[in-house]
Image (cartoon, rainbow, N blue to C red; front, side, top):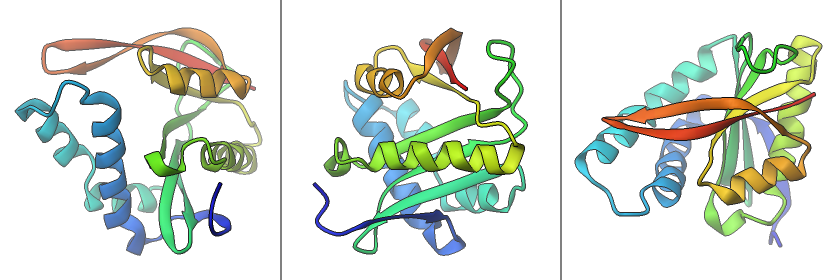
Length: 173
């Protein structure tokens, strides 16, 4: 249960450092289950920077929504418009990221962000269909998307160094 009301809004430049910090925290907590090595450290420090978030905010083909409670970032969703793929042709919008800080999981933050992401896709493209990739070992995320009507459309691979990690491609209309 949230102690203060949840507010979802478009990200602004001042949110970039908090978005980067939350992203690193969530990514490491989810995927660095055997600890952090140099490859993982380089990946998160290169990928999740305030500059990267500022760039996405400036990109007309990106929508970045944040969820905050009590003036603090609890999670965010990043959409990439005009993101064609072969597995689910009705969807041209990719839900690139939906991250919720651990203390806010199972509190409705993820569902609220997903609802707003679907609405943003519909408003911006006229089509509410979304696609995404999710690591097959992230059972909590897989169950979350299944609960929200996403179905498996194919397989994609996340490559980090010499390792390939299987991801489901999911879609919803």
